[in-house]
Structure formats: structure tokens, C-alpha cells
Length: 401
Image (cartoon, rainbow, N blue to C red; front, side, top):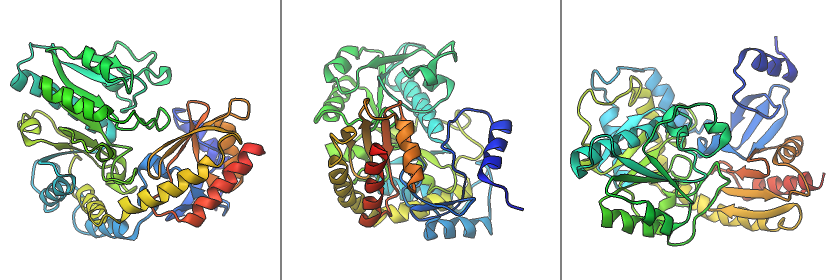
């Protein structure tokens, strides 16, 4: 027997921890760029799981890969080899132009892993004194919600009342190259940043910023770590957002879209001499690199290897931003972003981001606010121009409603 929306929400609120504030819609089915709720209403997904659903809901190639693997082998742990792991690592390394792959599950695990590797490299290779390693991070960052990661968050919701905090992080303003240079010391192990800050509102740094960071890393024997968990894998019109700057990082953290919106898959990819500091027993995960994850990840790599989704994001992204720019001065103050990714600042004299998100829901489009007055727009890369028009029209109506 089916139950209505209110009953599902009541169950969520009664038994689920209240660590999210979802819109009051209960999704039961999905396909491509569209979802259907328990009452049969259809909505255009304009968020795509914070970029986890870059290829849309239930992409046939990804679902087929998962089903095929489920019929053969699900888990071995890394106590044994499996027939998917090595091929996944090779194919992902070749796609990303890197040398070695460390598989994990969630994005936060990938960032934690990169932090551990950078510190170990600093002590064993660079020669930083015991427990002295420092990592430079940016204000406004979002890299996950583990205890160590929130230690260097300046978002009160993520940070406050979770101490004592992990030391060893130095925060500088995002986009300020001089501040990065001033923060580097002989103890600096790495610079960890998002090429575009997602949770902060899809903030794009000034031109030349990451080229400057690359130069500073080279000059000071410091690792450059790019968190591409949200921005990577075709979201911005390139494989990596950092590719727009023609810059290569020493390590990249990947997640979200790497699992195709089906299962959690994450990885740290980069230089073999850096990831190679890990030896057996020093780091791991029971599910990291398990067969189903690798099978889906290989299918994701296959989709990206054609370049189709990068091109779609590039071309449709220009169209999306052009349409959104038409609303500046009509309830929108600013539009930022790259590719099919945009941060839209709502006029404070108009509505809050939550109010606009609710008005969009009423018009058949699902989106979500960040930091009160910003909409974070990230449609699946399978979206069409007509669907973008539908969403932007709904946004224009929502702003005036």
C-alpha cells in the first residue's frame, strides 16, 4: 500500500537524524534528467546530487555495469585481488594523465587520504620535522565533514562544537596568491584547494591564480592537491576544472560522479612517487576498490573517454549562463560558474534561496540553496536546451512569485 508525501516525511523526521534540511518532495523514480515523486509529479533535476549524477539518473551503461557485476562478484576486500581493480586503476590513470590510483569510497575519505599522504611525504621525502607538517587551505572551503576536515572549515554549521580540532592547517583568503606565498614555510607539505568552490556558491578564482599556486609549489617543494570531487569529471566543460587554467596538480581527489550516481566511489590520483609513500597496512578501506565500485567506475571512465560529456557541458554551459544572465537585475544579483555549474545570488530585497527553491519545486524544477541567498545549479550533463529553457523560465517565475 502506498503512502502519501506527508507520511514519508514524518517517517524521515521521526527516525532519521536531522542533519539535512531537504525540500518537501519524496522522490520514488528517476530517469535521465527527470525524477518522479510518490504522488506521480515529475520534476526536472537541476542539482544532480551535487554533481554525483553528472550522467543523469540510471544511465543505461552504468546500470548495466552494476547489474553485470552484481551477478558475478560483489566484495573481496583488498585481502585478495579481484578482476576489476587493476583495470579500473589503469583506465582511470590513463584518463586523468596520472600515474597511480588510491581507491576509497566517499569524497571525504579521498580528502582524508590525500592529507595523510601529503603529511607522510613531507616527513619521509621532504624532511619536515616530526609532527611539523602544515597544509595551506582556503577560506570558504568545503572538503567534507570528518573531524579533521571540519577543523579547517570556517563555516559555523560545519565547524562549531566539534572540537578539539586537528592542528596543522593554515587558512588563507581564496583567490589571494600573495597570501598563499606569505603562508608558505619550510614546514609546508601541501596546498589543498578546490579549483572552483562549490559549497561556497560556485566561486571561480581570478585568472592565473592556480598557475601561480603551481609555480609556488614548484619553487618551494610543496605538493599541489586539487579537490575535484564536485568540479571534476566534465562538470565544467573539461575533465578537470583545473584544466581551464592549463595547470596540473600533484594529487587530485575524485568522488561523486566517479560512482555514476549508483554507488559511492572515490579516489586519489596523482604522482607515483607521492602515493608510493604508502606501504601495506598503512592505509586502507574494506570497500575501497571493491569489484562493484570498480565495474561502475570503469563504465564512468568509458563515458568520459569519448569527450562527449565534456563537450556537452561546455556548449550547454554557455547556453545556461547566457539564459541566467538575462535574469540579472530581475531578482538575481550575480551569476558565477563554468560549464553546467552556476552559483546564482538572489537579490536580498527579493527572496531567500529557500523560498526560491520552494517556488521552483512548485513549478516542476528541483534545486537547492546554499548560504541562505545563493542557488547552486548543477543539472545532469544529459540535459537539453529545451529543458534548460524550461528551468530558467520556472526560475524567472519563481523570483517574481
